[in-house]
Image (cartoon, rainbow, N blue to C red; front, side, top):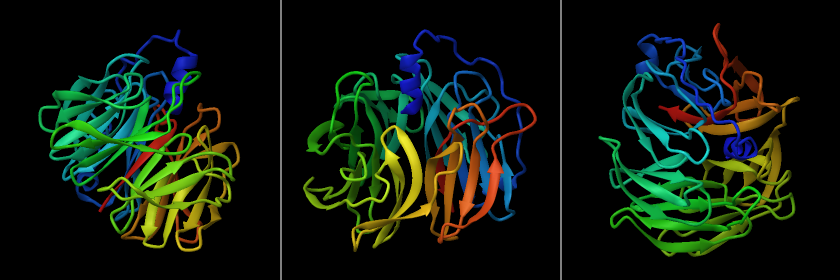
Length: 355
């Protein structure tokens, strides 16, 4: 979302990255190994967006595996579906973006123009659902052909999205400098229609599924007003709420187990610490501090290895991002700079674990 905000502020910038990235084909081990994909959204220039891969079997890091075409302007969405990776690229503000279908080695199998600044995506009923912020809708896309099946209207500026069974949940947020929204739109993936609206507090910026298959919805604010709701995905009733956050709530709810979660603290436009939160006691502890001159920009948890993955971005969004690996106590164990001889990956926004 940060990049779209910057684009609105800099709307006179109309160029689109058309140069090619240096093609770096990783060894076969990147195709078959366990690890994590890291998607860096970059800025408005070619080469600043990257798809990287961490191979945890060999403890090796591949800075750039996306090939053979340039990963363009502000890619922000990524999911792994079986042996296929889907990535959305926002493009210029107010214009069509792209969706890419790659193999697990990052080689593009198919791409297509789609939506308006497509941000995040999820899978349900063998289809893809992609949020289009400025258009206030969701594109329904065929997984195989990447053709648009239909569009579904939502609330204002939909961003994060997740599915539970055949229900799709869409966070509606706000238009920068304009109207605000505090709802989640519910889409039925069988009929491809909006069937309900869940009303929340100001902003809804993060979604996760709890271990008991309930929906967690994070709504930022300051430390006294931030809240995470627990919602029954069948009745859409809020069954619980979690507050008392040490450093507020920003985004990226990550479920550890039935009693605890992680998230990025701060507020909607200011990422900060990594917070460990107890769903039992309703209190948080700062597990990982905000690094100097950087922000914690993305978060994921690897249950198999019990490791925490964090993507950090420089506060001015001009220096290479980093991929950090912590143990469950918040101790840094590995750090990889997302940079190669030709260019750097700026702002690692999305991390997807592959096990």
